Image 1 (cartoon, rainbow, N blue to C red):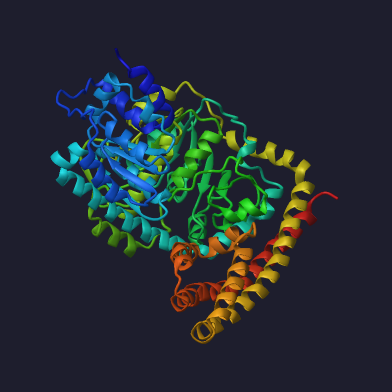
Image 2: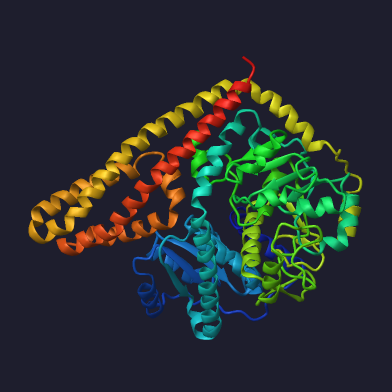
Length: 601
């Protein structure tokens, strides 16, 4: 009896990235003739080793799936843990999907990710690093421990290297925390008269969208892109607008993601501000200041400031945040109704010593040359060969593949000639793409017309929006003043507590209780994450990781030393930040008032 259809139904719904891989294998009839069969008997010795590796760790990486028997044992022993699965043998897994009922394992809700084969390994690493909070337990099925121990060690080594790069990028994000508060606050007024992506309502349902990045392959295929313009929505991703204008091509829509002032250089090119613009509220505010109209805004799921200030709840259709603006462009295309998305200029690697397409001028030339010379990684390209690439490109590729895996109902094609292979996006040269879409029709003002109509409609709700924003800003201002006094008092008590611990332990315990209550009052305020976590994600996460051990410490002197060192420095940091936050809030309120004064009375 074949279980294929039922297994595939579950895989399509839960793990679309695996579904696409299996469909490709099935089409090529790539089934394995040799594969290991798991024993049906409980392996007590292996499970003892698994127990030792997992302990209290909440996130488990399982190397191997086979027929799901060993994984079932892990699930039964640890039903409360989150599990990520990697099966290196694609064809063996395809055989299992045909021959066994895998539904009890595949349907387990705490398997949060499944990657199949080496091509999906970095996608897996990206998801682990994105959702990982604390340690990761690394375990392998018995047969992989016996037969593929070297491969298993190599995968673990690759993950540790990937994690280092990811954390380096996260530290960079922490450095720009102030921009992530200022940008949303300075763009709240834009929400009064410009539409959100949720207002679009799929105006070009079923259309093809071409998302154009700045890779060097664009130089050779720009003429094909020009031919596609009347037949597909052309969406420019970030700095690519410079390259398109250099070739005399104006896209239907531009998108930006970057929160830094570098965007001023990108959009200083004549004509760069003419197309409609889709931007996240956390992107650099100077561009919306320059453009002023014909814009669409989006809110990212990790934009805590906008979520709080606009009073948005968990049901709001947030955009996924990615390290590449192409991820934003994908979601923009889907919001417009696209059912087929084509990538061009999405090299994600270096070709012929080039980093960017012609016309991209915002980057420092010396820095680009250094990146080209120091590109020590390799990536498989669409022709099966290898291109040089960088850690930043690798991270972009992985995040892009992660976004693609979410939208299984959309067809993704990669028409980037010679560029990196993108998992989930089938390679198709631009000539064939053009032949496929040449009967479709998209007018030049397709997006502009929609944005202008929605802007007119948004005027009906402006008064209500102004009320929400002013109430939020007033409340936040009042509460920050209260918290400022609380932090001052905490700082004073923390300064005295080390001496108390050594001379009057009872008073030290009482003081600790008061400090803990004051801290709890601050962190439980609904805007705490929007302000302080956004400004200092690393400092607060570091303290959160320390908190359990500090709470369990029974030696009053050791306990107080921990609180004095870690909470004391965090309280000082937050106290210093409040005046800057107040200035940003005042600027936001002034912008809202200026916009309100322009509204019809």
